[in-house]
Length: 305
Image 1 (cartoon, one colour):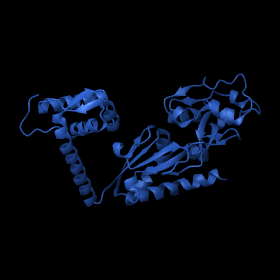
Image 2 (cartoon, one colour):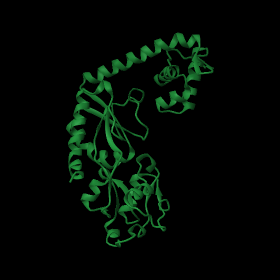
Image 3 (cartoon, helix red, strand yellow):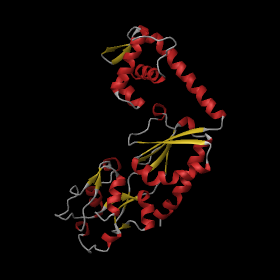
Image 4 (cartoon, helix red, strand yellow):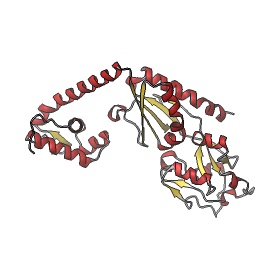
């Protein structure tokens, strides 16, 4: 590699170096950084080429630093920490607070996104970004301040919802439902991410009813890439959708969807709010937390009616 005057490796390359050294694995470092293992390997190879010697060797337990790497990593880690501190201090000096939120695709699209403009308008000094993923957040590694995820009761988080699970359909389908075997009137719609939210037709039906009609095919209906696309099909009258209360509250109040059966069950999983331990008392976190529970309050009240 030709070294140009004044050239220094990119920050992302230095971050990859520190991550591999800390986790002793290219794969784990890639997961922590949100990039591919190939990208990490390429960055380290370029850095070794630029420095002129190997920084890592493989041993029985994974990846280990060479003597050259061991002498370099502590200084690079300290440099990155100093750089982060300087940048964050500069941001705060101009009154901008950075708030990083992680949540699931369903909650982001159906609940959070329609309401976020209101929060941003009320708090123009907070720079808010949202990461959408099913994976459980690792606050420090993922650089996330606050997470909203589905889970059972646990210490260290606050329950946001009292969601029920029930079936919905378009009003045009609801008027056609017979008193018995109504699920046979239209297909049971599904979506690819349902395993992450436990919105499973077979499980739900087993909790609601003692007997399953022989003609019911819980996995035979159309399967859509996302929850949003499934709901769009449901609104068009293409079948039934199994949902959680907070994800369709606006659709039901607007009459776009209706609860087509009286049966419902309180979900074993609820949306929980978890906050990075070192950020719990920060003003931007408190502001978002207060706003979040204020917005959720009407739905929690309706679920208790």
